Image (tube, rainbow, N blue to C red; front, side):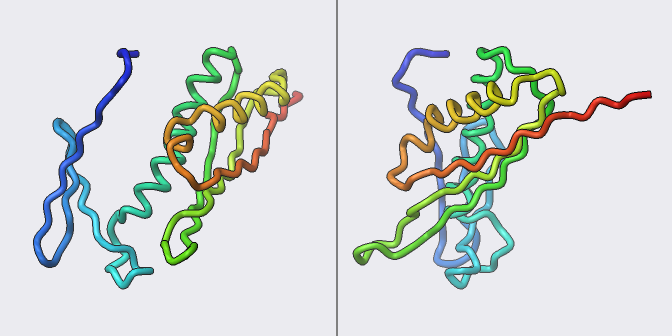
Length: 149
């Protein structure tokens, strides 16, 4: 890892109407629009979806790193994320993110270790740690069933 601080530059341009391309040097732009909940078209990424995506993506990538360091043998991870947007004291803000995580591990793997790795990934996710909304983690560990012939 490069020494901190890291600075991430993103550029957006807009006209009176239409999509807003959001770009990072060296990457294809993402075309964004207002979500359907705010009378947008609902068929493009919105800032709201991008924020929830950042939370879930950071959790998954952090899980990979923690699992590697913890020597957790796992086969797959699935994570559904929901961000709750509410009005609090006349301010519209995300108040909660819920991550519904399923970790699949081989039969001989410790379910307790898998749970600890997921919990540590939750505690150390830098995106979630940067938000004032709480993140709730619901974890399920699925163990592979060995086939007997």
